[in-house]
Length: 431
Ligand code: AMP
Ligand code: ZN
View 1 (cartoon, helix red, strand yellow):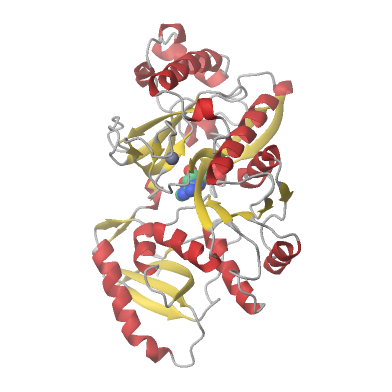
View 2 (cartoon, helix red, strand yellow):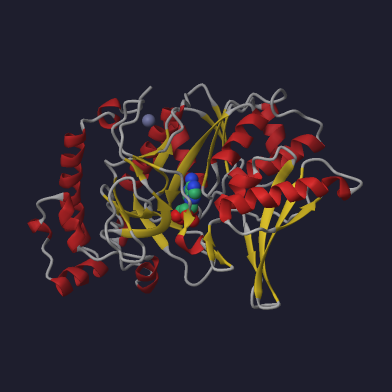
């Protein structure tokens, strides 16, 4: 059941002691980085004064901006010679942010991924197909090393080439897969094109889905369509990549590996710390990293902590699924909403297909919200969907308080992104 029972089920007070011990070490180590040593001087901070986990609140937050400004080596805590790997985060604008790992960091990361997927039920007898991107993106290599540590046979298929993915699944009896949730839905279209049934014609039993926001309804759709268990995997390059938080078999929140990451939830406006249970921005401090310690890193991801213990026996606290990044929030006709809320309403309709997009336009001086959504089976006459359009519009209005226009389109019409799904096209002010 457990990859590392002692650590995973550690008494909470012992876990806090371990965290404090590691926090002290990491704060001292951070003093070796050009960036934090300068911050310590500016605010007169001495890491040896730290007596409790709360003392971290005396330190400023670190954000992507600082990573960019001090690119490339401003956060390095070891000589460059000790670095064995670089990764980069998937941001699309501006300078990239890069993260560096020592050999020990890579081993530790692999162990966290192994711990996560073992918790979900992966075993060495599994055949594991990794459809995430290999390269600068952490999803591919991160899972690859973790799965090998468990001893699974890894098929490093990488993304794309969907027909070949299915051929691999069939020929090598893939039982576990790592996949973007949006790609898992798209692959269903390809199964159909090949006249194959994902429930019967392949031996898949579990999927690790993550790297992009997705709703509980999306998970259910994936589980039902493939007849598998799907587990939510959360991580970000700045912490390591996948292996930061992961669902256990309870599928009710993601255990944050607190021996490695100190989690805080803050109000993104006031920057005040929020109590467990309240939703806000996740802030992480690396507790066990050599190459590049990060202190109070603002993820921009919104979630909350579940304060109650998990029936699985693990004591590491759980966080909710990610609602979105704070910059994903849409303001339409003055109303705030997140794409995942629209997805939640959409996924309840069995007629709905495998892709959707949220389009924002200005019509006159008003915002207009259009949801373009693929239907499941091709239709000769789209008029038969008149009633469905009305029902979907109402379901979305109930969820987000704005009534959208619904544009139903044929399967496969909406352009798919190469990597993480692009759900929102904001044309406001441009037409
Ligand atoms: P990257 O560092 O490029 O791998 O991107 C990390 C970001 O992807 C996170 O900060 C989240 O915004 C998003 N992300 C990763 N995993 C999940 C997940 N399971 N659910 C929602 N968003 C996720
Ligand atoms: Zn659990």
